[in-house]
Figure 1 (spheres, rainbow over the protein chains, first blue to last red):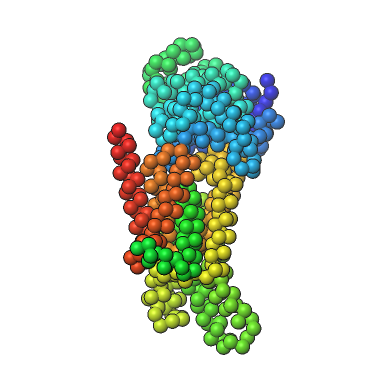
Figure 2 (figure 1 turned 135 degrees about the vertical axis):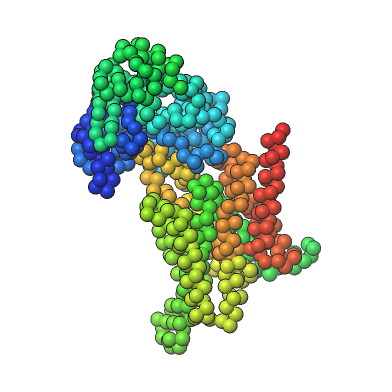
Length: 254
Length: 301
């Protein structure tokens, strides 16, 4: 497996003030990395840095050749989008923007790519519907399809299940897992424990420092992992064995 | 009634007014959708006040240069010539452009939030403009001058052929920019952070939107006056958004609504001798209510 993103002792911050220090991790193609952390731990700063919108104060972020064209991004919903008059097709096509460069309008290949990604996420029947009339889960699928139009190598998901009902959350997690098995590298930012179940790797950041990076199995048997799972899920003791944990997560976490 | 219309349209000034009016309506409605969705509805209002301030400055410069040089200095004559020939555009256009760019930059700066920066600039330049016009008044009828700059009561009927060509030029530029960058404008309006993440320079396109907006504001000042420009930007977009559900159809519909309202408003203002600007805005309001009612009925079915 080739390495797509390498973070080498990265310190992030604004205007000379560090938010997080000593981030050190690697993402290889096909990985499913889940980034955990409380509010204010610098998750959104890390997202911006991974997208290349801010440069690290120290250390460096190395991008593999296959993702030089950019990272697919699923941002958190904004107020503007809630009443935006746009059809699903228009939004999915806007993912091809970078691909088409400065040429006005989209060409046949780009339109075909958009159709293909709508098919892949099962939203072809919604193509002419208005985005603001869709359910939360459907909206996230639309945005996922758009991100896949930008690149099918690596996706960065910022709190993708926020505001969805439990069933839609599970469906979305399944869908993301399926895309990952299809070869798309996933980096998901979350504060939701049930996200852990689908990941292959975990990065846990606390205030100002990196608390854990490693595979999910290691995380679940580590001290920090256990305590996070217990406090966040609010169910007494959680077995360390990870198949058990999975089942508990699936049913218990709402 | 048609005789009366035909009589009025035999004057070139009325024909110029109609051409400029329709062009301005078309341009402002194109950008209006983006501005409303980006929560920049009031940028038209703010910029138009800036343009008003700049126009006062231009008038003052014109008058005081004339007085100082008393007509025999070639440089002074050149300055006053340029200002008068271009209808103060040489000063108004760059000042409005700079204001638009500043407003956009403060939008990203957290120290003064976008809406308060807008209010500050708009009220400030309105005050300075009015003060300048009062202190260095060029004519005896100050309040009349201010009123016509703000509400555009008659200025559209005093356009010269060079004004018409200037408007046509600006309109062509605006429409061309809009068509060429249509997909970028959509992407930046819908989701700036996604566009940025995929490597599109969203800030440059925001800048482009600000520049085009200030072009439209300056263009529209001749038609409806600076106070009513917001209406021209907001109403057609809001009307179209009531009923239509895709970005493309909203834009096409708002362009049509805007052009129809501007045309009928102009004709009505000639027939009933009402002020041009307010008549056009009234037509826009009527269209908005019609669209709202239609949307309600459609939803019930």
